[in-house]
Image (cartoon, rainbow, N blue to C red; front, side, top):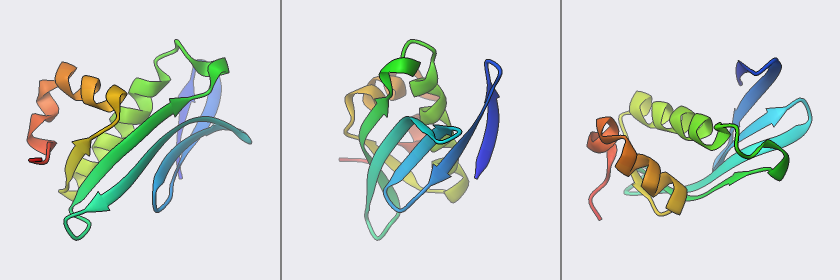
Length: 102
């Protein structure tokens, strides 16, 4: 688990086979759903979700950045099918080298 402080709260990330989730204690705050292709070398981001109670605080960007950092560390590629992640990647050309070719 990876922990971080967010506006006075201690939150933690949990990476599973097909989700990266962010929790505030026992409360699910945000989640990225993904699958893999190309023998596990490419992550396909299918959805990004943030709980209504936590929206408007930059949490979608925070969980997306955490996901991208993991992709970089693993030396893999990213295919953003999710609308949010696709727009995030367009706004952050510094991550362009991570984009998989369709």
